[in-house]
Length: 224
Image (tube, rainbow, N blue to C red; front, top):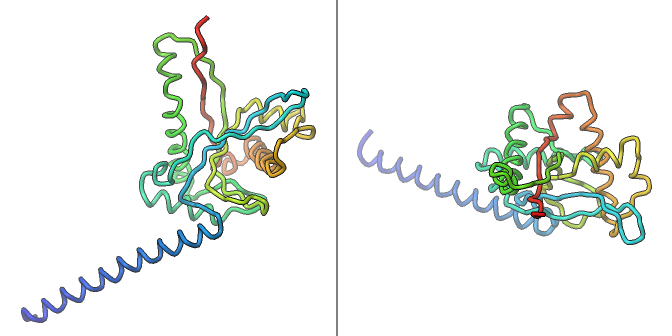
C-alpha cells in the first residue's frame, strides 16, 4: 500500500469516527428531548421515603418525602450500569414496577450501588455510634422502581425506601392499609407499589427477593 493510499485510508477512518460521534450526540439529544416532552427522566434517581404517621384527627396517614435526588451516573458510576438500569426500566409493567435485572450478579451490583448511596447519606449515625453517642436505628427496605401509573405526571427512576415495621403494619396481620389516609389522591398509587414490595419481600422465590435490599438507617438522638 502506497503512502497516498494510507493517507486516504486514515482520512476515511477519521471521517467515519467523526460521523459516529455526531450521530451519538444526536441520539442522546433526541432521547432527552423526547423524555422531556413525556415528563419521564431515566437519567434521574429519586430516593423516596414512605412512612406512617398519625394526623391531627388520629388517622394513620401515609406520608411521602424525598430523601435525595441524584443523576443515574451518580449512583451507578459507569455507563454500562446506567444502561442496564435504563433497559430494565423499559421492561417494567403496571403490575410489576420493580426493576429485575439479569444476570442476578448485575442485579446485586445495581442494588449495592443504591445501598452505598444510602449508607453514605446516613454515615454520621454510624460514626456517632462508633464514638459512643446515642443513636436510634431501624431496618428499612429499598427497591428500585419505574412506575407506570397513568396519573403520575412525572416519571423517574425511584428508589422506594420504607421502614420494614411500617410495611408489615400495612400489609401484615394488622392490615392498616385498608384504613390508610393519604393527603394527596395521587399518592394512593404508592400504596399499590408498597403492597407489591411487601409481596416481593414475603416471596419464597429468590428472583423476587433479589429486587429488594435491607439497610439500617437512623438518626443521632438528642443528649438528655
